[in-house]
Length: 159
Length: 149
Image (cartoon, rainbow over all chains, first blue to last red; front, side, top):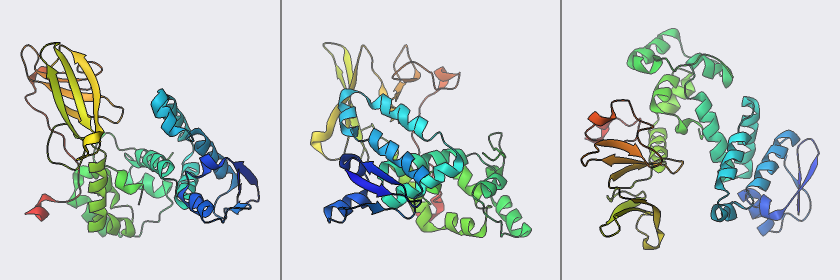
């Protein structure tokens, strides 16, 4: 068992087989730096619970492919990314920090799918980006490729 | 950035308008190359051609009249040939494998002429499927063809 500590001082016990899906922790264990609790100053307990849920489910991924449980795992993944936008970003940050490749793939793809059809205004709002382009600069980009700003799929809602 | 290079070209061309740093990033050559690479990696090539992707071939057995589709999981590695499936009395050219394992076929032989998928005919296609002559797999890219000349 490996002990992880979130930045709000909560401790979690995780099986080693699950936690080594994180390259970062795997390296720590190999270097003998994981004998006591591993502090994770960038991750809060809410996010860490999600990450551990994913790790535990994916622990037997190789086995699942053999026994035909892939569909089950696919369904879990679909349900897993069905979370709020802010929450999804917290998980991406955590997956990036812990270096969990598959989780990073899954969450980034979900984020991309959600952004794909958004309008420029909606993207700015979703990612809290301040527009620093002048009106002329903006018009120039639009004139450059007007087709990219048209179409029935473009969605101006923020969610 | 890990999120952005998963977006289609139309979204990226639009999102240059989000802010100055997005405009710079999306116009950057490194980003364009990375985007192109990601799009390519998501493709499974079935037709035996010289691409660093999956390679496959079709094996039609005359005696049992069954059709077998093979895929080379890792290009150039003989041990990775893998039999995808067998369909009795069927002959067609595989065109594309989707992420869920469904395969798109082109049938160019009378009385069939058109596209179908491995699970069922014509599910994914526009209604006038019988008039299509050919189909190609393509990758969207931000890299302009002018740069390749």
